[in-house]
Picture (cartoon, one colour):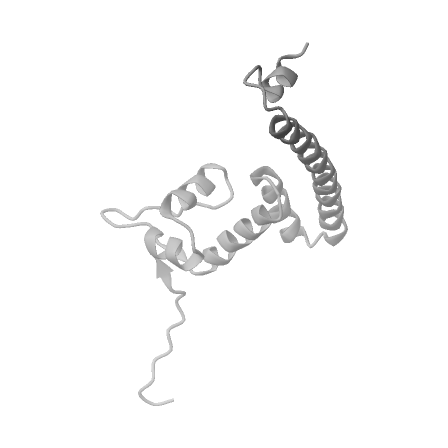
Length: 140
């Protein structure tokens, strides 16, 4: 079209703008770079590193995976599997994570019952003597 120029270059962001676009802080970007989850672009002589807008999608992927309970090491594995289009392996990782979460929920429920019982003992014990919670924790 006459008079209209198309920009075929991808938009480049500073680290601050990338952090804003991804909903994280700059130190998170740097930490992910140190962990090998994000590449650090070359720094031009006398300039600032520039990041592709696509990197913000990767950062959001990392944050969503963490919210589901994946460690950063596991997230690195997921990123590798994403490149390999390995749905079966990804499903296996997610299923294992689900099992771990279910076990953790059982453990937390047991802890809740135990602490609830100790708090009730404390409430029922009107003596100014030893605390039942401390006594239980000091048992050998």
